[in-house]
Structure formats: C-alpha cells, structure tokens
Amino acid sequence: MSQAALIEQLLEQGAADQGPLAPLRPHLLRAVAIGLREPGELSDELRARLAGELVEWLRAAPEPLVARGLQSLVPAVGAAQSSLLAAISDALEGALGDQDEAIRRRAVTALATLGPPACLRFLHAAASDPSLAVAARAASCLAERGELDDALRLAVAPGDGPGRSLALLALREAKGDRRAAAAVVAGLRDPGPLVRVAAMRAAAALCLTEALPMLSAALFSVSEDERREALRALAALRSPDALCVLRDAASDDASPALRAAAALAVAELEGGREELLSRLRSDRDAEVRALALAASSKGDPDAALVPLLEGLADEAPEVCAAAAAALGKLGSEAAAMPLAALLDDPEPLVARAAALALARIAPARAGELLGPLLGEGDAAASAEVLLALWEASLRLP
Image 1 (spheres, rainbow, N blue to C red):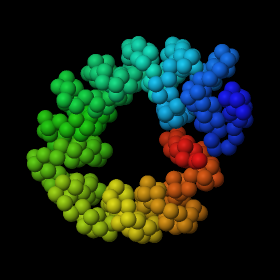
Image 2 (tube, rainbow, N blue to C red; image 1 turned 90 degrees about the horizontal axis):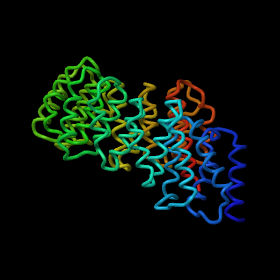
Image 3 (cartoon, rainbow, N blue to C red; image 1 turned 120 degrees about the vertical axis):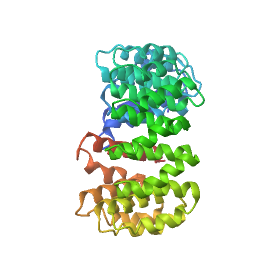
Image 4 (cartoon, rainbow, N blue to C red; image 1 turned 30 degrees about the vertical axis):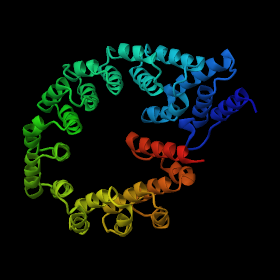
C-alpha cells in the first residue's frame, strides 16, 4: 500500500472512530505522523487535508489532551522541514488569530509541541496576546527553549492570577538567572494564593536559598495546600536551615498528613525512609496511611509491592484508592488480579482507582475498563480518564 493510500485509510478510520478513543482521533494523529515522517509524494490536496484535519482536531479535542496527543508526533517530526510541516504551521498560525481564547491557547501548545524553528516567531507574537493566559502559555513555551524575557515580563505583570502563575512556573527553567530569582521571591510575597503556590514550585525547582524566610512563614498559612507546597520547596533546598524548619513542622503542624510529609522529607535527607514508611502505613489516621502508600511507589518496586497489595484491604476507601493508584504506577502484573477484584467495589472511589490502575498494567483492556467512566464526575475526572485512555493507546503495539 502506498503512503498516500495508507494516510487516506487512516483518515477514513479517524472519521468513523467510535468508542472511548473517539475524542482523541488516534487514527488522524497517526496519519499526520506518517506524513511528517515520510513526506514522499503527497499531493498538495492531501497535505492541505492533513493540516486542516489537525487544526479541526485542535478545536474539538479535550484541552488537557492537546499537548499529550501532539507529543506522539514529536518523534516523527524530528528535524523534518517538509511542506506538510509548513502547511500545519501555517494552519496553526491562522488559529492564533481566532476570536476564541481557548483556540489560541491550544494553537500555542500545538506550535510549541511541533517545534520547528519557524514557529518561534509565532510564539513570540503570541506572548503579546491580549489574553494573559495565552501570552503566559507562549512565554512558558519560549522559556523551555531558554528564552526568558517574556516569562520574566509576565511574571510581574499586574492582574490575572492564573496567567502570572503560569509565567512563574515557566521560570523553573531559569537556574542561575538572578532576574528569575527576584521574580520568584516577589511572587512568594504576592497576596494571591495561586501566585504564591506557583512561586513556591519555582523556588523548589531553582533551589532558591533566599526563599527560606518566605517558605518558613508559609507554614503558618491557614491553607493546607500552601503549607504542603512550602514543605516540598523546603525539602528541595536541602540546607541545614531548611532541615530545622522541616523538623519543627514534623512535630507542630496541625495536620497529621503534613506532619507525616515533613517527617518523610527529613527522612529523605537524613536516612531512615523505609522504616518511617513502615510506621506511617500503620498510622491510625487514614490520610497518613494514604500518603505513606503513595510515597511507597517511589522507592524500591520489589519492597513496595507487598505493602501496597496489603493496602488494598484497608478499611478506609481513600487508603485503598491510594494503594491502587500506587500499584498502577508500579506496573507490576502481580497486582492485576487483586485490582480486578476491586472493579465492582461498592465504593466508587475504590472501583475507579482500580480501573485506572489496571488500565496502566493492561493497556489492551483500557477501553473496556475506562469507557464506562467517561462522563462520570466533573471535567477534571473526565480528563483524567481520557488521559489514561490516550496513554494506554500509545503503549499498544
């Protein structure tokens, strides 16, 4: 079969896609990938059709999947400068002028993912978009390529919290840049919690020792989320002063789970992590047990398997769900049967976690396992299921 005929067939299959993967249109993405990898003798008509189909997919696909779906094209694109790539870039440039902010934001993501050098000028233009969210997305993409000026400008711009947060997160790539350090420290003092949390994550990535006073002060916040982020950032500093603050939090924080998180951070730095995890998995507080099980999957897989399987029998649904999620990340086939036994659990949280975990271990069953979960819960829950379906499709032969 010729390349053009294969692409035509994939496009027809994509148009007829049914079932859980239909919103992803994997046949379309594979058709585009083939066209980029082997430009061959594609007609101008077929090139235009592929470019147009991709932009239509960009408009219709669930937003959390745009970057993930397009990432599957990256190996195919490589350093190719085919006329198809140029056609796609031109089509996406047109999408940057769309009146719909969501379409412009997706176009930025797509251009950055495809990544030909010619797209940089479009990203620079998008960094001046009237929507701070679109501009910050473009600035973030540029920062990943070492171009920090737009991210620095937007990180201190007045107004929109989500846009500034995205710009601050982009500065995580700016190790050693004093301008970025100053912007992050300013963000830690911002009155908006969204901006402060983004600044904490940036401070952790940059290991900013000058952030220590603000991070220590954040441990007195009434927001548990802020205190959790501050603990993570302090652990990333790995300094004696940060260690002292973490020790205090391990004994003084009002939340049992955050006390446990602080103790784990200390154990990571001083040793004794496995012994502490063993104690925390038996804690009387369910949130602490769930935290310990989630942390167990990040260590030795062989040592983690038995405690995680035991966690599936915990009386608290949130602990059982945490054990299932950790087993999914572990990817051990030994967990398949115990997870399958929980698919009909009367507690929806447990059944959902088991299905998501089993889909990671057995991607061929993902459609069967996760299809029924689509449409349940809020948009974030649906996005989680779609992402799991997409990742499973990429692991299939």
